Every structure is written in structure tokens, then in C-alpha cells.
Length: 391
Image (cartoon, rainbow, N blue to C red; front, side, top):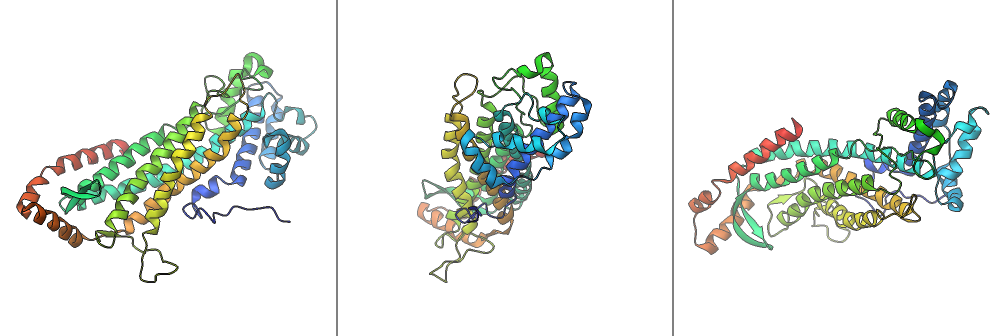
């Protein structure tokens, strides 16, 4: 029987995205191999192991491992590092084998691998958000004086402009970019069995620094086996990212309702039973990511309470929620940056809906213009921030 696969059948928002590939089992396994290879390099660089040990890093990084078989073997030990190490040792010369995984523990390799995976996803997210922000900055300018109605508690409220609404979207993307940037250089883990890397003695910090350098990541000040700040920080950044994208999508869902008609997706989604519909599918999918992420973040947050020097169960419970969060936030950024530039904004519909408000208030267009005359100062503030964020 062939192994089961997850090809995104029930997660169309992430299906086919870069984030989906970056977070797959193959990507996680490749990151684990990178970590084990980097450890050999670090041991040689720090003078803990003979220089020749470092030469085996290339071999370890390219070992062909069956991910599904490894997953099945991981059941007995509780994590995939345990069955991986013997395979790596058998792939290198006999005198090098003892140095494979030397001084590390399973958690070091899994944590480091997940940080490598996360770093790749975050770089992609920042790229997508940068593209999205660029489009929104343009929309702020082009929609600066386009009148429309603002809505509060689902009801028509007061006049506003399309540019002002877009500036709110842009400010949210700025928030996400800033939080994401705090996580782009994530820490490696090399605390050893109980956190003080006893196998390396006084050379521990040197090995840690060499390990981080080999992977292009950050060396932590001490072990974070039970200090899960990096993971909680990741969860926050990913939640904020999806929220910024979903805010845009949620607004477009209202603007795109048939009776409102102020916006429509460039190519609406089909219905299985109503041929006349053009559903705002991309907005729906993006909103779905933000509905899931807070619950996943709560699991990650609960896992931050870890006892003693190595946690039992809390660490294990992080893996899948964190991967799902990376995938969903990455998908939200990718989908939004792709579909938003194709959204059609109907200025005539905006004017028509605003006229309904003016009629109910017994006001004229001059009053509406006066009400929105000052919004430009707020748009300009967001555009100034845009220059600060992106230079």
C-alpha cells in the first residue's frame, strides 16, 4: 500500500503555493540534514573534531532518506531525529561516524530544522507583503479623492474615500512586515541533552557560533529547549500577517456583495449549482487563514510552559501547529498579493451608495466633500510610514 499523502485537498488556500512546498515533509527533512551537516562543520571549525570531519558535511547533507519510512520509525522514540542518526552515520567513513550528531540531542536538530524552514517561509512572506504594500501605496494615491461611504457595525455611517480605506489596509501590512522582520534571523539550537552542551566543555560557545554561522542563523545566548520565545514570536508574526491580509479580504467581501457592488475580484469563482454567481473565492480563502491561525497560536502559546530542562509533550505538540501556521500565513500573503491588483473597484457604485447616505441625512455632495477634505493628511502619514518601512 502506498503511503498516505496530503496534497492540499482540504486546504485550497495553500495548495500550490511556495509556502506549501517550503513546509512539506521533504523540506523539513532537508533542513534536518542541513543541521546535522552544519554540526560536522562546526565541530571541525571549533577544533573539537579533526578537520577531516568537516569534509563529510557534504555527504550528510545529501543522504537519501525516505521521509515516510522515517516517520514510521519515529513512533518508537517520539521524534524523527532518533532513527535518522544511524542512517547518517552509516553514510560516512567509519572514523567520522562517531562525530555525526556528536554533542547534540534530538531536540536540537528538530528545533534548528524548523527554524530553517520558518526562515525560508518568512523571507517569502516578506517578499509577498512588499509587493502587496507597493500596490496599496499606489491605490492610496489613485483613490485619494474617490468618495464612498464608510460603514460601522455593518451600517452606513459617514463619507470617506477609497484612498483612506486603502491607507488602513497599507498600515496593517506595515505592521505585519515589521513583526515578520523581527523573526527573519532565527536561533539555532545546540544545547545538548540538558542544555549546557557538556560534550563540548568550554568550547561550547565556539561550537554554537560556528554552527549558527554554517546555517546563516543566529546563535542564542543559551539553550532555549524550555524557553520557547522564538516559537511564540513566530506564532505572533504569522497571526499578524494573516490578519493584515484578511482585513483587506473581509472588506472586499462586503464591498463585493451584489447589493453593494463596489468591488469585484478579477475572475470570480464558480458555483457548483448556480451558474450566475461569481464568488469572491480568493477573499474567502484568505479570510479562512485568519480564522484558523489564532487557535493554532494558542496551542503554541500553551506549549511555552515547559518543565525542567527538556519538556515532555509540550515540545512535541508544537511541530504540527507551527508548520500549519507557516503554511497558512504564507498562503495568505501570496494569495492577497496576487489577487488584489486584479480587483476591480467600481467608483460609480461607490458614488451611488454614498448618495443613499446623503439622502437619508438630507445632505448634499458639498457636505460630503467637506467631511472628507482632511483625510489626505492621514493618507500622507501612512505613505510617509511606507517610505520608512521600505526605504
